[in-house]
Image 1 (cartoon, one colour):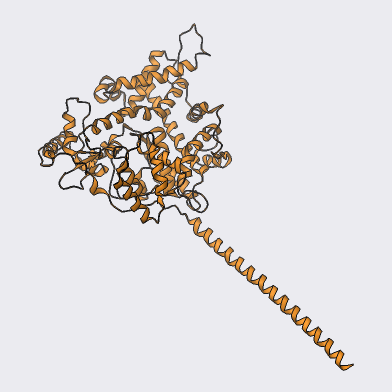
Image 2 (spheres, one colour):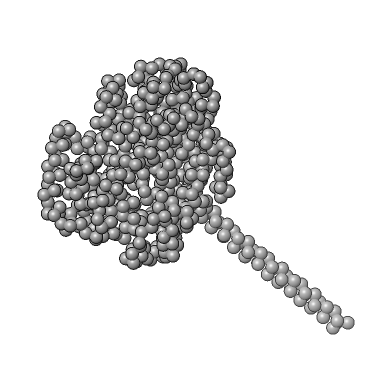
Length: 554
């Protein structure tokens, strides 16, 4: 059976939106103007892309709270850098994805992708550039953001087809095969192994399957996740199935299940990130969000044997996960920066990577929802923080620092600037990453790092062993952790995303012209009144004068 990829894309998008039927949205969420969104999607995906109104409404309702709280231009639209930030937040919190072309370090370099540079891994960036060219002048409205998300998700779902086809091929099944429950399970196993371990041929895939526990120690948990997905799908269709016949499965069934796997695997697998975070936090006795580098490496040899923290210090430094602000305490690993680093991404696909959820996103969402504005005063921020489900004890020192930030900005603090993000890091040191100044970090995945330093695997291992031993024997390793760890990283270097667009200057010109025209109209109107009054006075005076002449000449 030949598989029409566009048909499968339409099918998956319909599946994704099916849970919205019969559900209403809050009245405060703006209505989706599907005509404008569809015109943009038609231009990117081609006519007949099959993105349903319900699915667009779901994206719209998720984006709206983020969109509402961000700074906007004079037309109420988002600038290009703020649009990228919003898209990054959307995919990170919804799917635990980092979409290629939307990474934070891409913002810092302001990179663009031209028409001649559309290799597979850069297609999301190309779509971003294409829409940026259309909207960079006047900015992105909420509907434009929905277009961007829908187009990017359509790319990902289209890539799902490739993975399923490989899964069928690696298991020697034809595309039109009718599969038993066991065979269906084998295909789903293969799909996840392909996505996580990157099998590229039959031999490599067979090796990955045979030694899966060596590459993926939590494979049993992953199998339970797959069983939950397939089990819920089977239950959902049991009303239409023949109860006296063993159920079988075709490509379409696999596609529907894999669609859910693709969207839910990232948030589901975050339990591994949470476990790793808890393990490191256990070594952070003062709650500073930091672990001495020697203790970080020592955790690999810990009696639990659960985690292997073996990233070289240079890799940690490039990722922004290393605190070297204290010459006395020595290098320390910043827990939230390490957990959310590219090195901890679970898998890397052509269009996105599945990475650890950023726990600070939920803190931002709560504050944004409480305040509903891109700027806030001290008296607004502190109550918003205190209403968090598990809020910390905000010390007087932190309150004073927030006052200093407010003073810098004239009393109103930008919620999406570097200084407020820095304050959140010290208020929530294990949840919110430290925001380094733009251009000071260069995040890389484990594979990208290996490619950069080169050498054989044995050479890299030998180099790491020497470095680990050096840190364990250093004088820093013998010093106790300090409650003041990280204090030297507080700076007053602000960095704000540009929220204005070229249309603002145009609008200002028109507004200036309108003001001048209004002033001229007032002057002319006032002048006409003066002329009228002067003429009236002159006429009356002349008439009176003629009357007097006649009187005296009679």
